[in-house]
Image (cartoon, rainbow, N blue to C red):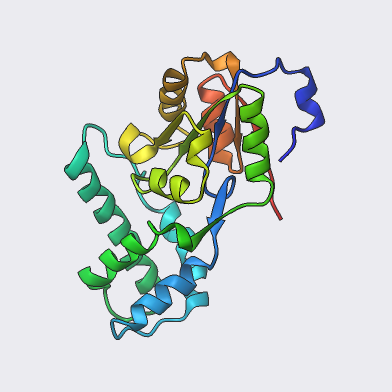
Length: 220
């Protein structure tokens, strides 16, 4: 993870806002592989490749993973319901022929909370250690839910972070600027004091809306 030449003209940052999925961490196996294996345990036969093909469209058509005004148990229940609907939609779109039972939806929700399902992407740990040594304040800004802090902790990344902002608790998802503003508040920094590092159009658009410079990375 290195800065592009275009960033040479930017003022040196005092902090960094970091995307999570696809930037810091990724899945060891595809979503379809995990869904299909779990579904088989509930008597549902569905092709993993078909799930992987259907899943991006299911996510694009979903409402934001964001629940304004909810906290604690109500928030966690809303997160579970949101993901349960995505799980059900992905299986049906892949030709399962049957709705996902509640036990399968819960199993998969908990499965993706397990750090063992994830891995730290190449170069990330070295970069975090380097940035921390420089004294930069670091926060994650992610369109995810309350499972993320545990994942980052289990993968050994949380020690380098001062804040983790997830869309579900923020009440808005990227490209909305609110999660970025909450991260800035948590770090005690202004928009011109930080860069955002992410891999999606939502990262670039949300950072721009918050007045934050964005370094968009591309992984193989």
